[in-house]
Image (cartoon, rainbow, N blue to C red):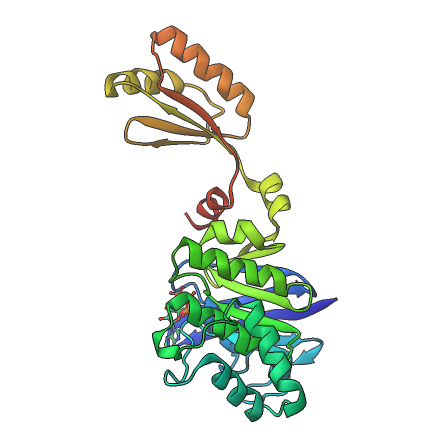
Length: 305
Ligand SMILES: Nc1ncnc2c1ncn2[C@@H]1O[C@H](COP(=O)(O)OP(=O)(O)OP(=O)(O)O)[C@@H](O)[C@H]1O
């Protein structure tokens, strides 16, 4: 079942059309990566899902229920972690979650247990200090706990890892993976390695539309060409090699690097044969030859270039 259906939505700010007949859907129980460059419209889309921004055209459904601007019915099924979550800094995490739980009407008999469970999940059970003294990563983790308090069917996280160091990012990704069994997760990001690590499906937002969507394996198999990276001892060697290889018609793209070249082709075996032919013909000794696996990063670059 699709927990989220986005059907032909558009959004314009003045003359700036940010979202242009955007459509995609998210399956229940999955982790969905919503990818886009800065300013692509990820936050705008999330705010429309939450009914916080008016849609110019199209429709959004959460669990089959239509989202209406300014109304919170569908938000009862959603937990939201904004890109910069705000807290009462003078409170400790337990106190803060208790306040949130009381405001949203969670019965007192359940609340203490639920808070301990969530603080355990996000690794903050022992963090008995004021939130003001928390690191960014700790604040993001507390934000996830808060977003999960009401047991939402859908957890939406806006760039949860963007401002974090590698350890902080890994902690967040591990939590999202653990949450997956109970809650569908959508997270926006421009960090492609995070997406490769935990997402079941992705959508790449570009020019207001989905430029690419599918599972990671499908996308790699369908779209990406493989690359071959070669490095040389001297720039002179690189020039000679480039003159030889550029006559080969099966190459789609050549990128120059500091001491080498990266070659892209859909027929990597033919490319390899030609590379060795040029090396022999030009009497060049490369310092490195490496086949690059198709990656989401390459795919993304293909789509947004
Ligand atoms: N309230 C607004 N009024 C006018 N323009 C806006 C408004 N909100 C967003 N925009 C514009 O819409 C575009 C998309 O912004 P949005 O914040 O949705 O992008 P994003 O993909 O989330 O980017 P980032 O990764 O930088 O957070 C930007 O050009 C932004 O300036």
